[in-house]
Image (tube, rainbow, N blue to C red; front, side, top):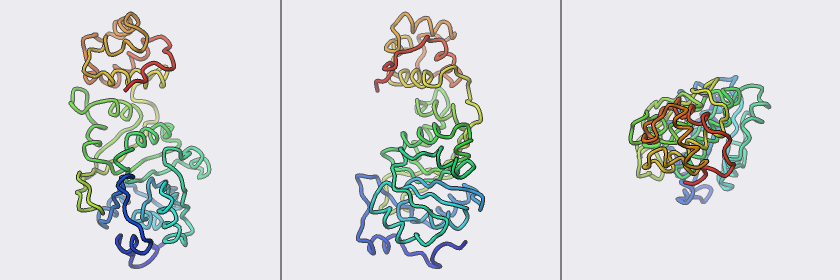
Length: 293
């Protein structure tokens, strides 16, 4: 199916036509560079069998290209004005459905069941809510059964944090939780000039492929997440102190000893596998433990 319209209108034309402007409070920076749009769609390797969930469809620049290749596109847009714009500009496409929803609340599992196959997720993630959106995507992926792959644009520094190795200054909770559930790679960087309005940062396009099984086996994924969160909430402290809020000083000391991890180490020094051993060494934790930070 061809892209709707032989000559798609420019971003400025679309905004003027609908009397809209980018909302700073929503972190809206619209991707206007056609070459970057093409590279993102190519990286997603979308074909006519695929169902794509696009996070933050915005003005529909990527959406136009996705509907030209995919079997079905679900354009998720939280901004009511932009959702209405998408329906007016692209509503004629038989393969497009505009979903007026917050991507954090979108039911990826239900969409995958309806599609009868894992989804392909594509999106330019707003800077303010990138972390929650990344956690939502990786948590929903279900080992590739719900989300088969994702191609996402995020702030460059955020992408580097996500894929950082232990010992790096930018290695943190995000690194551990994403790497536990997915393999990631940075594909290319995108300068501020590719957007309207221009952001003050460089962006990166990355590809995530959910792991069929976690990188490190854990008995209780929720407890693993608690331990990782608490360890990095007090990352300047030694682990024996940082983990005390989880179950008390004695329990933290026992868990560290049982897992073979020195209590004098700090969170950024532990690998994903070490965090898994440490989480399994604790007994059941309180449901409200490790929720600070």
